[in-house]
Picture 1: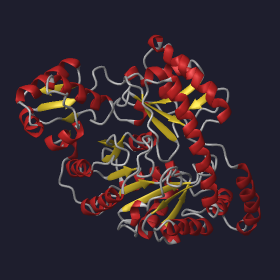
Picture 2 (picture 1 turned 180 degrees about the vertical axis):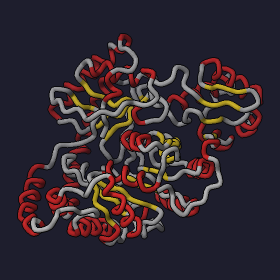
Picture 3 (picture 1 turned 30 degrees about the horizontal axis):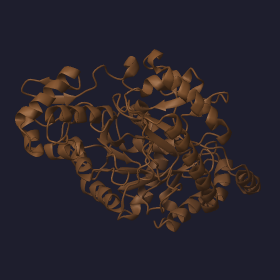
Picture 4 (picture 1 turned 60 degrees about the horizontal axis):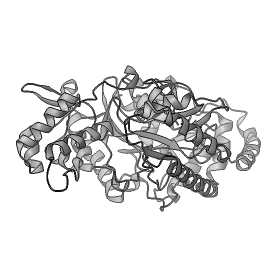
Length: 501
């Protein structure tokens, strides 16, 4: 069902992505060269980099020359010269009397608009620098599994189908939300088979084919796959380069206003892949935006329990959306505990939970009872387990950054304050080439375009710091070999077929 209760008079097929002159000026930042010479060349280069980095999404209508000149306080001749150069280089295409739109000259590497999702690679002979996941904390998991076998006896006399989840697990998840500052009742929780299943359920409830879903850019690639699989169109809103102020509320508001999306999907906690954290003001702002525009907002908290250098923030829904009607929170046991434990959850209003449960039989008949019993025990130990995970991740993050700094001094490797991955700037648009070359060295990489729309982020590479410590040195050595042989690597390659967690 597409956004019930909402009346849109807009013909959505006629809507276009555009950026206003003031928003464009903010996005350009400090682009002027020292001394004021070569303004047109500097403007050209900044726009080119914004397109390649995905911060200025493809097929975005840019401001008219006169409007941008006024916003930047330069002559129209300067803007016209920059636009002409960008057209000649293939970064803009124009229609006389209609405007100019961004593009990438040759399209995404390999000729495909989007990477093809495949199952995660399980070949242990490969060096997996694509998957952000860790082995299970075996002792904790074994104890929970042993206890769950005892708990199972009480359930064997029933039919075993749980559309909303076992009461004991729903209560445990609700308590955890309450402990984090978001009062929650068990009736507000629906248990799913992982966060990806939760996203698919919400898409099925709130969207229909052809509708738009606003996403951050870059964003979690499996969410993009789910959006496209539903027949919807992801509408990207670029994240800024400052991890502490990455979300531009003005641009997000303008995008929601102009495109009338059926849904929005955001990752405010250690955003995947950038590691950015949404600030308090921005959290209150997106809640207000969701209410004012009646746009359901999915908040993905999969990584929320993994702050490494900052204090845990209040959940987004705690900023005026406690009932869960406008802000719907998705979580998972995969990152703190284990990916093999396919348990996730949705926190929303009791009404939405009931509607999801009514929809669910078309997709499945509920999760495995034994897995839910294991998870119920684990959620009660989440603080101790997360603390152990954080210590391990902090050590592995620092180790990988040090190795990369020594081996690849030309790369820019920011230090995320939480989560599981580095968002590396390679310095040139060769991410897909590198991923293909690395695969021939038995190293799996998730190329930057996997996290974007329309081939963006060729300058970027996501590198998780979750690989076993005894394999990191060899992985980096092989990655260095791939980097040195980059010139002979063909476009595209096996990297596009790597599923990303």
